[in-house]
Image 1 (cartoon, rainbow, N blue to C red):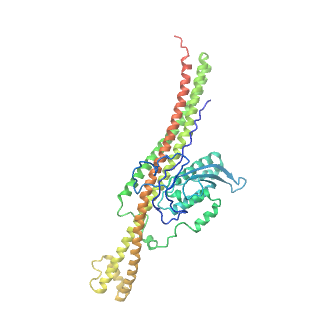
Image 2 (cartoon, rainbow, N blue to C red):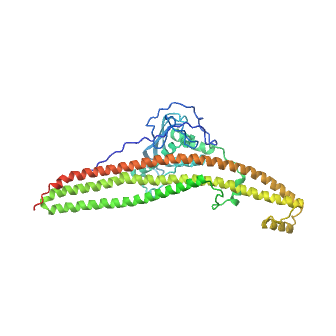
Length: 478
């Protein structure tokens, strides 16, 4: 039985090069400052999928929200090896390889061996250091494989290798994450465990001090609160994300159904080949042509199965991975809404405290009582009267406390407003970056799917064209 294996040529995983005008994460310290313009000589094709060159001639004027790259970073994961195989602490290590012209890297080519937990540390700390970035997700732990012990099988290790490679490629395509000191250490450091402890002890950005928002958020905010004045730009983004994820989910469901039916069809063709071969033993005059036909049907069944394994299955894996990546993007949009919600709730809290302060001031000066200021103010006055705290001295003391709280709240509101605006700007840039990455992955994914389908149909045509002359030579007596 003949089966043609067409080995796809490796595609360069390169990003475009654009000079970064300004650092968008001031709280994170870079290993080296932004370098002046310099000559670059990419080791691979510079027409990476979905990315543009800043030094390309005739390029259009870019928007402030367009992604800007300082260099390229080409990554790969290969050579999975089982370490400590004779012990209960056995694990799999992977060789991570990087080629880059970024000034943060000390050498243009570097590599190191890392295990899955190292990838987890990298992902979690990047998410903490860069909360406004869409940090790509890691593959699932596949608990079943850990229970059965199959996590050391060649198939599982290869599948994990591909998923980890996709994770690093997404990092390398990101103009901010590719320059992170932790990413550089991940590829270069020979003492990675030391670097991890140093990063935990001395994170790149200063630890945020406890703020007034932290003290009042539990009382004010809850999971069901909604933004009062939503920004139309981010509403459109959320709607776009919803439609994109729905489309991916539907595509995944349809192709899973198609995969099942294709496997059933391949099995039916196999059964047909066996039946035709049995028929050939009965028809002694055309035994040889029938056997050739049975072999062709059997070969066609194998071609269909091969296409499922090499084309459909990787496509489904990439669809699912892209869906998880989109979930990470949705989480950033949700976090931006939370920043705006913090500002709105603090503003409302400040307004309520100011109103209470004005009420006390009016009562002390004799200009007004609790009438006209709401039921809550009236009840408070009655309670104070019953408990004996309605004298002017107690009111003056409360006013002083309210004045201090108002001052704290004003500072907190100003900080929350600045944080919300800055996070919104970063989110807009991040959406542009995600759009470039999404288009690049979809182009690559659909190209590989099309190549697999073309290969299958070409191989099928060759097999059927080869059997046609044999069938035509069968003599049919009148």
